[in-house]
Length: 95
Image 1 (cartoon, helix red, strand yellow):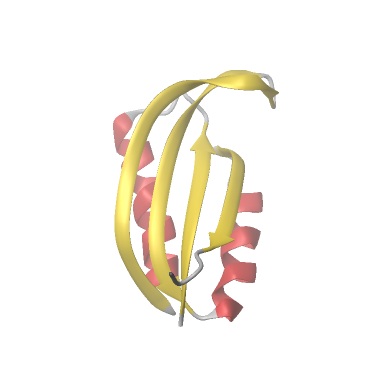
Image 2: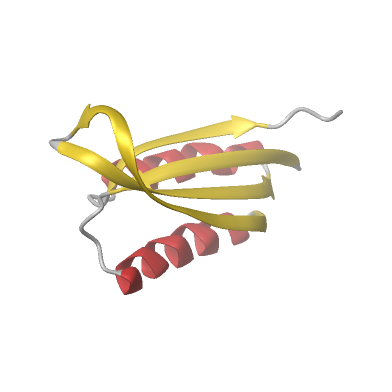
């Protein structure tokens, strides 16, 4: 299994309960073929440029271990989730 880091930006108008649901949804998906290590809610921040008519976003960072096959599925689920306006998944190098 490889180590990865993902950050996604959710629309800022979501309630706290809905943000927790999103985090749980993605954590469960990762745990199906990997292991979540750290979840950090970075809070609401102003975006550098407007994305999907949003000027702010709620940032969530997740560090995890997973098999490479999981990444494609995780990115697919990010794309079809309406509350997610931007995301990135990066493999962390071993130092």
